[in-house]
Length: 206
Image (cartoon, rainbow, N blue to C red):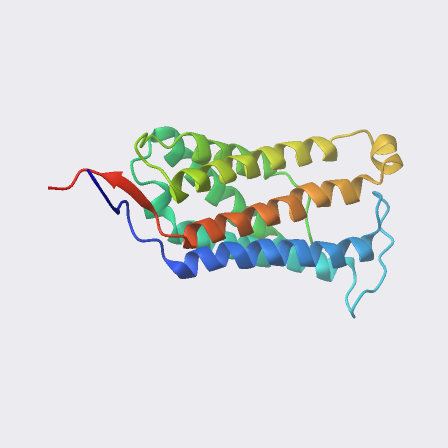
């Protein structure tokens, strides 16, 4: 038994798409929430020359487009040895991200998180449904982080469902954004960094 590269090569551009998506989501959210305000009431302030609709449009499109591109590029690695659950999750995540981004692109604003449960379920399945028990190293870590991102989306969606008086009392928009955009953004940055690491597993060689 000797150490040898295992699995398939990870496209570096795809990993960088995930990193760029996470950074963009966190950065744009900070500006967006300054324009919108911390509660459900839209203060519609102008920040850096743009209002809430402009920054929401960027927030709903740029990170999603980068994520879809990155996940598509990483499919050979993420689905290598994967079971049906992971493949179903991959499809759900991509579908949810693409449709949500397309809706926001057409509406030119950030829409309600109606497809977030689809994205969350897809990411959890993608992260936990991969078979390949022998896989180790970055691939295993990547799947774990992706599953955690899915859980963060579930928590964030739960915050969005709070009664309006409770939501506003705790400045729910900031909490929601810290989870859904900043928290998951950090998760995608970590995922991308892990994908850039060489994946070496111990495999049998003659």
